[in-house]
Amino acid sequence: MNLGKTIFAQLVKFLPICEFRQCVQRYQGTYKVQTFSCWDQFLCMAFAQLTYRESLRDIEVCLRARQEKLYHMGIRSSISRSTLAYTNENRDWRIYADFAQVLIQEARSLYLHDSFRVELEQTAYAFDSTTINLCLSLFPWAQFRKRKGALKLHTLLDLRGNIPSLVIITHGKIHDVNILDELPLEAGAIYILDRGYLDFGRLYMIHRSLAFFITRAKSNFAFQRLYSQPVDKTTGVQADQIITLHGFYAQKDYPEKLRRIRYVDMQSNKRFVFLSNNFTLPALTIAELYHCRWQIELFFKWIKQHLRIKAFYGTSENAVKTQIWIAISVYVLVAIVKKRLKIDHSPYTILQILSVSLFEKTDLYQLLANFQYTLPAEEPSNQLNLFT
Image 1 (cartoon, rainbow, N blue to C red):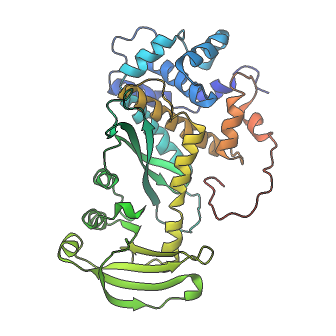
Image 2: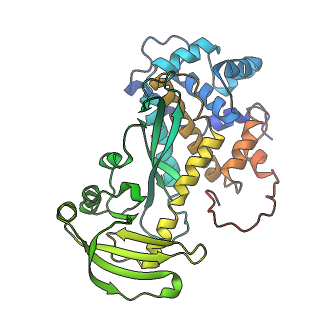
């Protein structure tokens, strides 16, 4: 049994501090810093995410109540609400964004060989955005409507492990389809998009990058069928067609052939029409891949329910982005701990255990592995699970 280190200190051991220092140096995070370092700030904000703190004063009271344990948890400075507020507002949020990318790369390497709903050799990504509503009078930089503020999290989710490989934070006025221009395209990868991203010029950019896309057609979609391929209608696939776009501007934006698949879900009896530039995968596999796009909706729901990204400790753009990136780092850290310790519990269960155990001095693996919990029997549902 580990009687020397708290659970929080053992979690910190999973964080690559050398890479964190490189991120700090990259953006001069040590400039005019005497006591409260960027590392102290990160640990305090991570503690707030893990324990669901409501405000800066809440963080201050909780940490000061266990002052004798802070040094061994990795926090070397005294905690005050004003210091936290100042550092969140003034220290470059890109420090924590870059560090989150370091953790993301580590997590993706751990989940590289994991399987998901579809047996696939290529990397499959789901891309979408979620909106976080804000009060415009408190967050005037987050313009959305005339009397409403909001920001958007544009996320590229790796379906192996459900790890967010890319997150772009913008104010609410930015249209989702414009973010496709900033997407790093990986040759051979499959990008699964909602029909809100149906822009043939940008889809052709994905095609020219030797990547593949799967999206849904709109109801007024005009096309010309070249020929049809045989299908097994008992699987739900009703048509598998090779088409070209109809219309001068559509053909100009996407001059090559496309694949159109008409699919009917047997359970809900809903009809779907998919478009793709992949001509080798079976039609049913493409339909199943698009079904996996729901994982990103569950990811957004999960982080909004279990992390602090809807209520913020500061009102400046820097403070908001700092809090979001540290929340993403905590999410990825839980995924890394789950994989490295080979824990069968879901990240939700792990997060709940950690939230009430951070000051305990016991072995982290024993704490998580010896926890016995059985989910109650549920009625059959057609909704997917984010973590299995």
